[in-house]
Length: 155
Length: 307
Image: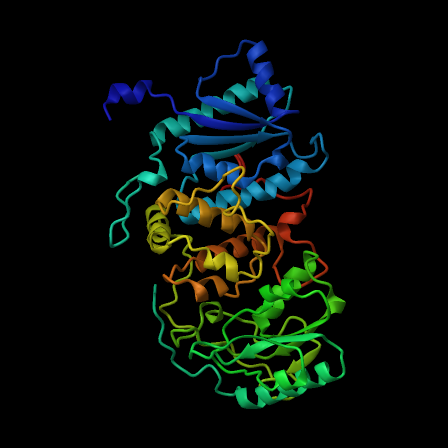
């Protein structure tokens, strides 16, 4: 990829944000006029516990450059325990992706509360920068596996 | 078939299959003739010469057909769903772990099942080599049982040695590079034909409607391409996280020799390490993903602990 394109390329990051904290945090970042990269596509969910790991896998398989998942800080869940279950799920999913060597550096989990507009902007900045370094994701449908089992796609 | 293993020793050096078979038949006939149970699930010889297939014996005469030998690799736990009444089952240690898991998840009533627990030192798969689940298996004694059948046919488990594990059995290596892990995973799923046999044979996959079968909210396309294979295997691994009892049924039935048990083993190890939980031991505990602890660590989170 030419350097110039690399410089201007903006990844497409799917962001699953919980309605009560992170989405409000993103809102606060907006109303506070904080600048952050226009890379995220927000999907609002009722709770981080509502996020089926399959959503994240599906996003990756369908070619998203990255996935950001954010919910209320542990202990602050609107539904009291939703993010507690989510935390285990995400830790295991991240480990699973790492064991398979597939997309573990493209999936990021964090906690952002409704009052942390600044932190939300920082998180998006950080995640976008990390994924920009990785380059565009090749949709797995296009991954070719040769007979010896060495993947052609170096990423 | 991955690293094909030749067995060094016969798994049953001290295991007396014939004596065990005699005991199983005796117990089954007793249970059926006293009407303690409606049906006994066990093994019978396959008419066309394959590995023993499930037998559902409803009378003492039918119980005569029960067999038990080193080729009985099938996991019988998935067959419970077909029966409502009192059921007895011939269960290897891995089957009993599956049953514990089903009881813990409210899929079975403990009082409705009678477990003929068999001490087992490993079985052969249909290729005649030690079955995948037996490699590295450490429990030769059932997790729960009502009627014990020890290795010598007695009632006291004698503590069979674990099945032989050869050096060619490569476990997940945490030090391996990302490329290695990725290539191993892609190499395995490249063989997959998305037949879903693994799901069918798995004692943990009991959902009435599996995500691969659903047409509305079509999460899973059926074309056999790398993307769909990745999606299927990752989702299945997530569904079984903290629930897999490593019986190896998925690998035993796979027609194309996909060997992904290392992933399930590694996830189990991770869950045991993080949440101190192991599936198939205690039916009173909720599974790791159905429970939480306030003090859980933020493993894998931004700024949290790395993996």
